[in-house]
Amino acid sequence: MMAPWWYLLLWSPRRIEARLERLHADGVIAVKPNLWQAWLGVVYMWVRVAKRPETIGLSDGAPVRDTLGARRMDQRLYRIPAVLRARAVNPGDQTGLGSSATHVIRHVLAAYHPAENLLYDLAILDTEPGALAELRARATAVVDGSDPNAEALRDLTVYEGYHEKLLAHVVRWMDEGRSDQHQVHPDTTLPAFLAWCAAQPATPAATLRAIAAGLQSFVP
View 1 (spheres, rainbow, N blue to C red):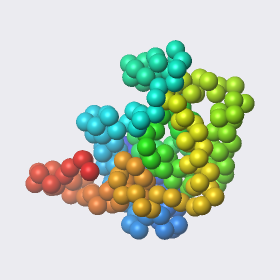
View 2: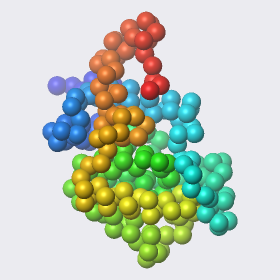
View 3: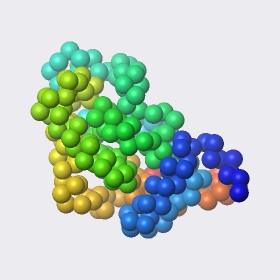
View 4: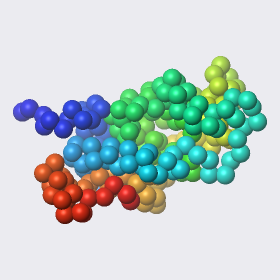
């Protein structure tokens, strides 16, 4: 059976489908969105970038590191090209669901995540055997300085204590199990984001009808 045309809109739709199946089978999500609804999630993320940029990459209270590199990266004009060069973000996969575990690990190590937003990416990595253990080892190496790129990663993520916070989240997740079930905001956790996706129109035609009726919104 030929795949619908909207599969072309998604980054690695087969990987996305496999992850959604895993999350549903594991009970992380009660309802599995289809791939059209997952693409509407991509639109949600782009609307967030355009209309709510203050929710992405800014500190929730931590000070900027006292280094020339961090002070420079505190300016988004410099930081955005830097994270793109470091392949820490994938503009083609705003949800992260289609990206490899290797990319998601690189992303959380090199791109600052405010507040509890790390939980979203940890849930993605939890679908891949060994991925969280690899992230734990990589974050430990940054924290203890044994990673040769530790200082560059610390400057790229700008704020004091980021990698320590990341490591604490990973350790808690691995030792205590999933810790995001109480979180309900689509910006913050994967279950909440996928619940938003699953509540959207299930087909392009249904989406167009919702838009025409003024019922489609990409703001939580």
